[in-house]
Length: 354
Ligand SMILES: Nc1nc2c(c(=O)[nH]1)N[C@H]1C(S)=C(S)[C@@H](COP(=O)(O)O)O[C@H]1N2
Ligand SMILES: [Mo]
Picture (cartoon, rainbow, N blue to C red):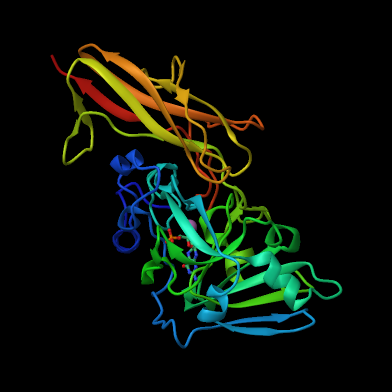
């Protein structure tokens, strides 16, 4: 389904009003304040209570487990900064526009998640013969593509066993708020956000690949419905810049004074460490290397900066990240039916006034 030429529909507006992005000025923070982190909630935020919450671990395991939140909090505890990005980030920049949550480029945030690593828990339950995937089920339910289902996603066993995958009950030193998965969620660093199942109530070890709607009916990269497509997995490299100067309310275009500016932003990739960031002030015609700060962890964005001596005129500021595996950002949006993984460079129009 594609959006018509007449702008976004009421259905898209309804989605956009529920699921907010990170205001780009929040790129100034290493760790995104909780209320400024983006949100994506397919159905309704479920009612949940820490005392009565139970996490079931079942399927192809030797010893199925039922855990309370207190049981989980007594386990080894980790805190790690992780950049999450929605796979649909950039969707509204595609042409024709795939109809779903119409993100521009702000569906990202970096939080300090606190929880317990998943792997030891799976090992304690004992992974049985023939296990291939681990399924994560949320407590939220609804209809999408006319199919009623709980929000559920799986991971290949090897991905679920990565040491940085965690079950989180905390964000930025506080309990998860309802919208981020209270009381418990999965956090899968490096993968697009749909993988990090919120309101987590069941983990099942599977001997067959999961074929539920959120796994095989959506989150596929294909350019026609006949093409089976490839699953959306890791976060493609991306960078964003903190728009300089002051905004115009209606257009978000920027007005700047002439003289010295320090352009700053963030860059990340779920595929490999960030290797470099380049900045353009002429819409991508020419590029200059930015100064890159170290990433606080392989799974969290890096800060970058570049001094800019602005003279009066009109500019289009862009930034482009490249990771250590050589993946980079295209100048124009790649297109696919679902509107996923659009990591095309951001473009910020700036007028420098005398
Ligand atoms: N149970 C459940 N988990 C979910 C979702 C959801 O709708 N239900 N949305 C997913 C998607 S698409 C994204 S991008 C991230 C967003 O996480 P956040 O809202 O905490 O930023 O949560 C994921 N986990
Ligand atoms: Mo998402």
